[in-house]
Structure formats: C-alpha cells, structure tokens
Image 1: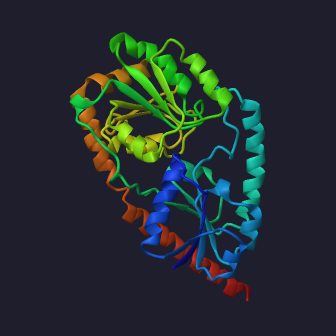
Image 2: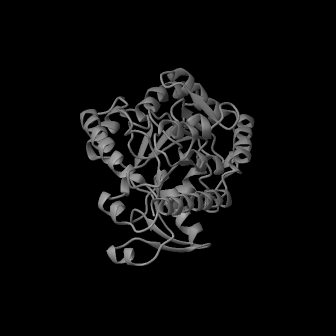
Image 3: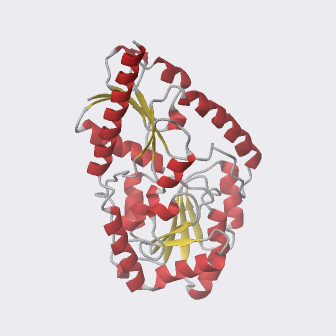
Amino acid sequence: MRILIIAKKGESLTGGGTYQANVLRELARRHTVKVYESETDLEDEWDIAHCLNLKHLPLDLAQRLPCPLVVDSHDYYWIRYYHFFCLDFPVRFLLQKYRKIRYQRLFRHIDGIILHGRYVYDLYDHPGKYLNFYYGLDYSEIESRPWQEKENLILFVGGDYFRKGIHRILRALPLVLKKVPDARLMVIGNDYGYVKAFARLLARGLPVEFIYGMPRAELYRTYGKARAFVMPSEIEAIPLVSSEATMAGVPPILSDAGGNPEIVLDGQTGFIVPLDDYQLLADRIVQCLTDRELAERLVRQGREFLAQFSTENMIGRLEEIYRDVIGKKQHSVRAKG
C-alpha cells in the first residue's frame, strides 16, 4: 500500500510519541510510506492517509486529502470536562470546550478513527471507529537489572504532572519512608514552568529528584534501576510507560482510572489503586520495594501478558483497518456515482 503519514515532527517521550516512532518504523518495512511535509505531497496518489494523533491534524489538510483518512486518538479528555487538582483548571476547562468543537468538525472528514483500549472505544461516538489494542512496542533497547543491583527508587515518568497524579505520590511518600527510609522518587518529564515550580514546592523536604529532559535511550536504561513505577493518574487512556517499566523489570502501580485496569491486571501484573487511598498506594509501593518474590512474579506475569502487544499484531490490525476503510470508501463512491 501507498500510505501518507501525518505526524508530529521531532522526538516525543510521551505514549503518543512512542507509538508514532513504532508505527513509522514498522509500516516502512512493509509498505511505501511518506511523512507529509507540504501540499506537493497531495499531488501524488495514495491508497490511504493516516494521522497518528488526532490533535496534530489540521482541519484544512483533512479537507484537502484526496484519499481515505484514518486517525489515531490517544485520549478522551475532550469529550467532557474532567476536573482534578491543578493550577490551570480554568484554562483546561476552556481548552476542553475548544477541542470538542474542533474535533467534531474534524470528524466529518475522518473515515476511520483508531482507539486504543475498550474504555476509550466505548466513550467515542463515530460511525467509523476501530479498536486496536495491540500498540506493539519495541523493547529491544530497554535494559533490565537483577533485583540485587536495583535501588529503592520509585519512578514517575511523564509530563502533565498533576493529571498524572504527582501530588498523590507526594502525599503517599512520607508513609513509604516510615518503612523504607532510603526510598526516593525520581520524576522524569517536562511541564510548564509554573507547574514545575509548584511540584517542587510540594516536594520540599522529601527525597525527590526532578529531571526535565531525558533522551529515550537513557530513559530505557534508567527504568532498570528502579524497583517501583508509580503513576496514579486522574485521567488516563492506555499508559505505554507502564509497559516499558514492566519490560525493564519494574512492577507498575497505577490508579483505578480510565484504561489503566486494561493494561495492568491488579495483583497479577502490577497494582491498581483507588485514587484517594493514599495508605494503600504507600503499602503497594513498599511491597514492590521490599518483597523480591512478589515483584519478580508481577514482572514475569506482566511480560507474559504484554506478549500479545507485538509489532506484528499491531501492524496486522492496522492493515485490516486500512483495507476496511478503503473498501467502504470505494463502495460509498460507487453508490454516489
């Protein structure tokens, strides 16, 4: 197939960025792929166009595409306003309203929308929605370490700190330190300056290190140093970082929000914790830091569970979606003719 890809330029350490890198690499091995650069690309013949993230799709481009269009959407925050503790909630409220209007206009020009996870799939209202849970990841560069070489390190990876629940970890950390005095938290990810300053204010007096930029290769080496990965998000679709942590030998602890229970099976491949139960969050962190047998079992079972998320399954499902969208588009054109 000849596929025109619409993607964000530059490397991104977010889940959407990881997905983009993997899809571009794997599609190029099987098909003729071109990343959209200018309007001259629209003069060529394409079987299908694929935008790898809805929020990076310009309306004017969607209107001009001469071929069927499929789009990935990696979140559901625009569907309605989800309030949570953050400094910029008025801006988020207005932004949600803007995105809802913008995306509904875009939907008219989208032939297929690809959603990752049943939770998100059920929230969307679009006649051409497709479920593709197989977001294949390349784990070859992720480094794991044996238990005895790890530190009592807790990892938090991602931007948008307060949506991902950094304040919840900071409330649980003093409870962790009572049982594991040498435990420390490493926050890897960027955010707005005022958010970073406020997060550092909340973390004062606690063993917390903030790292605002880390190349993916270094991140993959850093995972293996930790004994717990924690991300008690307020809102979450499918967090790819939790899978990366598992492959690095680090059991993930997530909140009971959004699609988290789909990617981490509570007590089997990690832990799912209610948002407001800080004591349980602390207890789960302590378990992962101190119970080697438990941690290794969670990781082993997690890796077995994640085996289904291969690049072959991901690309195979994408190709099924492409063929279905192209077929429906051709049928629609013939019916109108």
